[in-house]
Amino acid sequence: MKGSTAIFAFLTLFLLLISCKDKKVSFGEHISFNKETDLSYGPDSDQVMDLYIPHKKGDTTREAFIVIHGGGWRAGNKSQLTFFTLSLMKKFPEHIFVNMNYRLASETNYALPNQLYDIREVSQLLTKKLGYSPRLILLGNSAGGHLSMLYAYHSDPLKKVKAVINIVGPADLSDQSFRNYQEYSFVERRLVDPRVPEPGISRIDFASPIRWIDHTSPPTLSYYGTTDRVIPFTQGKILDSVLTQNNVMHESYSFNGGHLDWDQSPNDAFLIDKIDLFLKHIDKK
Image 1 (spheres, rainbow, N blue to C red):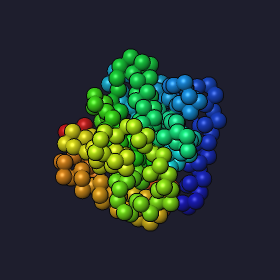
Image 2 (cartoon, rainbow, N blue to C red):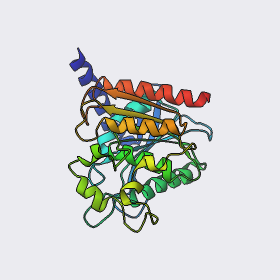
Image 3 (cartoon, rainbow, N blue to C red):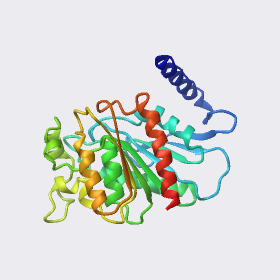
Image 4 (cartoon, rainbow, N blue to C red):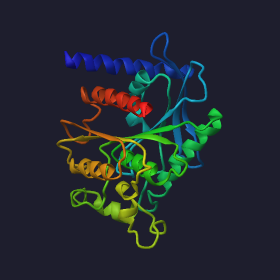
């Protein structure tokens, strides 16, 4: 039964995708989005995004999800999160959605600050296209979860970020458990441009989201796998501790599985339901 349900869900999403040539995604009679794919937000070929705006006319209070893929900061593509973005759209039909690519790190290009700048550029393009500045919900997995947290805690002086949805993202890059990450040498060498951190702050500390948490940080929901061999489950514990110390609203959940199992049934549906409740809780504050 579970297998047939998963196949049905996959086919439904697949049909939605291949029917989008008319620049519209529909989930039935009353839910539809206007769609722009590979919309450029910068001069680099990696600086593209997919934009989904509810077809139904709305006011200037619509909030926007910005969805950020993983891949160790140097790989991955927004296509990895297309199906999950569509699932979110069905749950949140009044929201705007962006599924973005960003400039990838390499042996010749640092990840930071470029990838933080890319999130900012996406936000600015949204403001230009919409005619107002929407509140943002940053959602990412793995490296995308890390970037969501780091941007929200460090690079959002105007406090546009309403909430962070962190899915298996590293929060403390200096912790010994994360130092066992098989690509840690790349993190040390190419994650942060050495010209960026202020004197007295190491590159690893600069890139650690927990370094920047204070009482003004946005509410954060986290999701970690109990058998994740890439991002240790303890990263979530460290993050929760620092959020608690700073009296930041947060929730943390776990799923049975490894690094890539968060969007498998039933983990994905569980997460979407928790996101819904979390955002409603924020709105009541």
